[in-house]
Length: 170
Image (cartoon, rainbow, N blue to C red; front, side, top):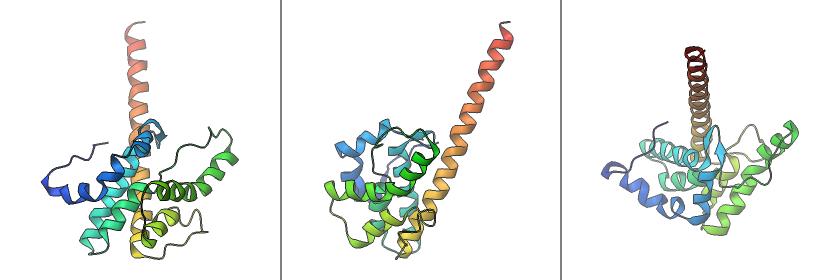
């Protein structure tokens, strides 16, 4: 997937999230695989695309950008191996993300709700209270789908290349 390049066109976005994207704890997300890529880039994509939607709709794009960047700000608690462990983390990670975010950044109530509710309706415990929460929730789904398709396609192409090389050198 293409990386988000910063220029004059999106300088406002970068100014809003710079403290998050450059924070030492947040940078650790680059080492965690997420949807076949890494969690840092996933959070940045969700943040940026949500920011664009909120800005077009004249909503609180600053809260959307910041909470979008923090929505999956958690480090793997442990390496989940069973389906039930993965489901458990799926349900708990919005709370972990909020706790980590509050440790390092000041959040308003809207940002807290965006982070907690980004897995609705999979995690129905936290309801989106704001239009901005719905935006991040929906953009997160679409970005996640795109990342999975991209990483799967990349894996299939690698596998096909390996088979081709084996076939050539037999």
